[in-house]
Structure formats: C-alpha cells, structure tokens
Image 1 (cartoon, helix red, strand yellow):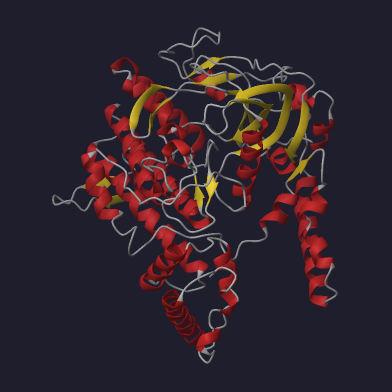
Image 2 (cartoon, helix red, strand yellow; image 1 turned 90 degrees about the vertical axis):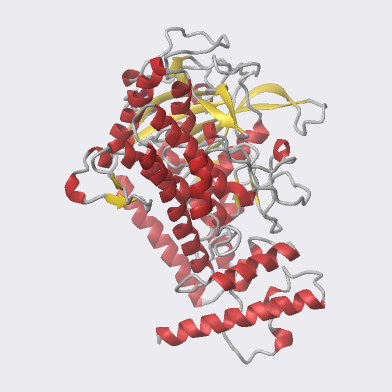
Length: 576
C-alpha cells in the first residue's frame, strides 16, 4: 500500500454547500450515498496484478531491478505445475503480441518530437515573461523557463509506457544530458515553456488567482496517432503564480506522485501520467509534519504528462474578473472542445440528444443545439465516473479544490493523497483538512458535485449555458455516479445485479470493525457457495481481516456471509 498520513477517527461531518440548485439536486440525486448506494469499495477483485503491470511500465535507478521487485514470472517459477507454466507462456505471448504492434511505430529522439503548442498559439498570453509574483490579467498563461538550481542532476525513475505514448525512443533515457533536460537546466529543443493561469475554490472559499506555482509546461506535442500530449515539470522553479513559495519540490513527494499516477493508470483510472523523475542535487527546506520543525530534503522534479492540464479553475479565474474577461472563458471552452472533445463539435440534431429536465414545466434540454451544454454534461459525467472509480479502489485525493479538478476527468495533482487501509469513511490524508474533513473519503462524491456546480456557474456567467442546462449537467453527474458506483460494487461481489441491502450491511460491518479495505475483498473470493458449510466455519476464509471481534460482531458477520452465499447460489441457479 502506498504510504499516507494516518488520521484519528472522528465523527463524519458533511461539507457545507451554498448553491441553491446544488442543494436541490444533491438531495434529489445523491441522498442515497449513505444508505442505498454507499460510496465505499476497494480494489476490483478482477483486476490483473498491479505489481506485474507496473513492472513492465517503469524503472528505477539505482537499487533493485524491476525483475527482482515485481516480476510475475518469478513467483510462478516456484510452482512446478503445468498450469503455472502455461500461464507464464500465455503472459509471454501476450507481451510479444503487444510489442509487434509497437515495432511499426517510428520512435523519435527528443530533438525530433512533433511539437504543436496549440495552447500558446491559440489563447491570449501574458506580455511579461518574468517570474515576479503578480496578478496576471487577461491571459491564460505566462511564458516562463524552468529556473530550479541543479547540481549534477540524476535520473531516478522513468516510464517506458509513457515514452511510447509520446513516440519517444526509450534509448533516450540513457542520454547523458537527459537529466539536465528534464530538470530544466538545459532547453528541450522545440519546446515552448509556460505556466498556466487559473483560480479556484479552496476548502469551499474562493481563493482568487492561483496558477502553476511550481509547474512549468515544457510544451505540447502530437504523436503518430494525432494524440495531443503536454509535458510538464513539477518543481521547476518560481513563476508569477508562486506567491510566497519557492517553486520547488522534494524527492519524497515526487516519488509519491510518480508512483501513484502510474499505479492509478494500471488500475484503469483516468489520470495524469509520469514520464520520469530526476533529482536536482540540491536540498529544499520543508516542514514535513507542519509542526514548526523544517528540515532539508533532497530536491526533485517529476515530468508529468497529460493530454491537457486544463482545470475547472482555468475557466473560473476569467469569469471572476468580470465582463472584460468573459470572452476568454468562451475562447477556452472553444479550445477544449476543438482539441479534446471534437465529437461535440460534430454533433447534429439527428442524434436526438434532447432530454427532459424533470421539472414541473417539463423543459427540454437539447444538447445538439448548444455545444457548451453538451460539453458541460460530458465534463460532469467524466467527473462522476472518475470519483466512482476512486471510491472503488479506496483512493482519497485529499485536496479536491476546483483548481485540482481536470476538465478531462483525470486524477490530477497528487498531493496529500492516501488509500484506505482500515475501512474508515471519515478518513482524510490531509492534515489541514482534519478539523472539518471536507475532503474525506465519504465526502468525495458530494464534493465532486459541488465542484461541478461551480464549473457550470462559470459557464452560465459567461452566457455559454443557461440555468436549466447547468442544472441538467449536475443532474447527470448524480445519475452517472450512481450508475458507475453500483456497477463497481456489483462486479466486486461477483453478482449480476446490484443488491442494495446486501452491500449496505457489508459496508456497515466493515466500518464498525475497521476491516482492511483491500484485503477483505481478496479474501472474500475464497468463500465457497456452499449452504452446507457449518456455521462455525463460515468466517474461516476471512479470519485474517476479522480480528478481535466479539461474539455479537461475529454473529453479524456470519449473518452477512450466509446472505451472500444465498445470493450467489441464486445467481448460479439462474445462470444454468
């Protein structure tokens, strides 16, 4: 399990919400979160081995090789069975077939990457290029070069699968100047570095201009599939958006971001990626535990990769600055649709995307007549699907401010994130969130909707969508989340349809006994669908996670396992 800050168990406090439309829609769509559709579930039981997938994706230097740390064949070789040998051969054949497709691709050197830079070329920029902290007005970005001091930077980790996305030859990682380029000390040929301007709500309060305070985008390229990818250095030095910070990052947090972004991708969850991790050779002072005892830590820079780093706050900042900047909101929306949602631009009325809002006047929202309405709905649905996936693996983001929400529905900005161990719905990995636990695990679906409400409010103020279209986008968030989450829970239990009562009772039991969030479902797969198992043996497959439970709790678990076996037997009966 990736490390995270533990927290004491405190009563769950719901977050405060102010938008009237949000309150109405939240109660209508999400009131079932704590009862009929609880928002808690761990790793998918059907997922392939995460460690084996990661081992084929990235490498660390120096230290243990990926083979010794992760190799799936190493564990299989210990078994002499023919089945294990066949499995190894099957895996090998699959990998060979994957490679055959990639061999026809033309791999590039860093100097030959196909740069495009549409964000800089198509949107208004800051006329100044200095890093002095200031309010950057009427601009989406500031051209700025990396400025972090380095001394003999070293490549620590890299991902060949991300290099493949960029059509980058993996041999480029061996270049002596690679650490210099990806620490920002040497220019990347063809790049056009900039820092993005955005604002955001932080802990429910409007914070004004925020922006890329320590992240600098090196540029934007197109691969051989015409996919657009941005390369961004996190910890590369000060920008106009750094405020009072130093613009740097430490190795500890950079490793966490590199590992978690690649892990989330391997779990099938939309996320930014990580190309490489470089140490700067310099030290950075940080107060790790926020206890007034700062210490020096090794500095590092991680190269993040995403099709876009546009956030909800990228639009909010311009709407907040009044009528003069509302045109920038439209320009940014047009940019996102043109490059990242082109199917919306090509919609026609023949597609029949008209929906009743369910209001008393039976209003109709026609998504084909307003591309911005269709876009807002897709952003809402992508966000809902993302949050449902988080709940599925026990991931808690920790800082779900609107500036940390991707319009592409990606997991973005890995700060004080954490994964659940003991099942605690009020868990938050963010020490600054401990008093109110606004961003705790259980609150993430509600916060996602609250953030969508702020996003649609921005589009409404720019007159891109009307109130009914905004409300419909929020309504779609609730529907999409419920559909996705129920499907996840159904698959986790190996059932053909969602069973509200069975899942509600299970999650209540897990919360009461603080059951390990991941291991429980792994062990649950050992339960046999046999109604003749003696009652005192029913919990034997789960004994590793049901520790120190008394007689009353044991009876509760036995009752649940019996109900589960009965449900499985019914499923098997109808499947015959």
